[in-house]
Each structure stands twice: as structure tokens, then as C-alpha cells.
Image 1 (cartoon, rainbow, N blue to C red):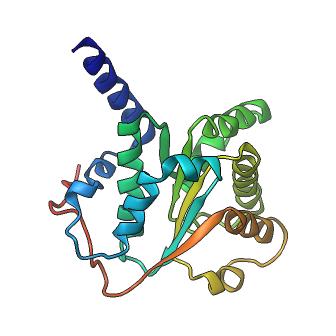
Image 2 (cartoon, rainbow, N blue to C red):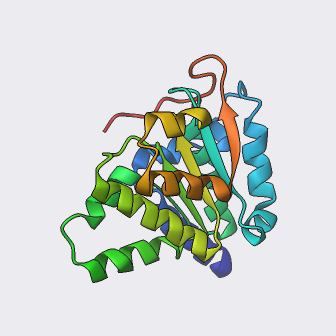
Length: 205
């Protein structure tokens, strides 16, 4: 009983650290409405996590707004802590906010801390400001993750063929998208808008 209680507390702490936005707690397999056949891939990713971690296999989820990319990745981010896997699900605006106005040593320490998580999930990539500073920080995070040889899941509303057209196809941005692609397996979410959502709507805080 004591071991079970300690495990539950550990899982609770992992989720509190890795799922910092409360609405993400609703993004679970239990709340899947069953209308999205691609959710089988999310289940498979969790079931084969050891292989994915060993082979540094990530996912690049792309598709239109409202097609369930965040729910898909959120289900994975909620399931893995139950298996004692440290996961962080965040977005680049949040990362940039943490990096703004701090010394170089603090920036380096924060970026390095992202690699403490066995899985890093970055939601809505491409919505951040396309300034030179933002692009440099984005590339640094992606490159650090690649060097850590740990999986990364990325969601974006951009289509693969649009990444070079919509975003500046030069400098840090080109390297940054190439970095995402080189160790993430692409999965396209498509079909009717919002074909899957949690069974219960999240409450607005």
C-alpha cells in the first residue's frame, strides 16, 4: 500500500510539472470520443514508448486548426507519466517568455532543463514571433533536443510544404524546421473540423 501511495504521488508530481496548463488534464484517452482513427497511432506510441525512446522517435503533427493535434499529443503527454516517464508539454511562446530578459547563463540552464524530460511536446509551433531573436532561441531549443537524443513531439497548423513558404526560408528558420523534420515522424491530421474532442468540455477558468 505504501509503495502504491508513493507511486501515485510521484505520478501526480510529474503531471503537475509537465502539464502546467490545467486544460491539458482533460486531454486523455479516456475522454476520446472515438471518432478519430489516428488515435490508434497515439495509443501505439505510448505502448511502444521504450522503442521510441531508444530510437529517438518523435512525431510531427500537422494539419488544419481544430483537427485534434493538441488532443492527440496531450493524450500521450497524460499517459506516459502513469508509466513513470517525465513529460513536458508546452509551447514556444511560453518558452520565449521564460528566456526573455535573463542572462545568457540562465537561458542556457533553462534550455538544458528541457532535456531533463524524457519526452518534450511543443504545441502550435510556428505561431511565435518570427524575429531574429525568437528564431535563434527556437533553433537552440530544437538543436539541444536533437543533441540530447531524446524524442520530441511537435504540433503545427502549417502543412509540410508550407513551412518553407509561410516562414522565412533562410537563416535560423530553415535550420530550425530541418531540425524538427530530421528526428520526427510526420503525421497529418485531416478530415472534418474538430472530429475528436474530449467527451466533456473543459471548463474555462
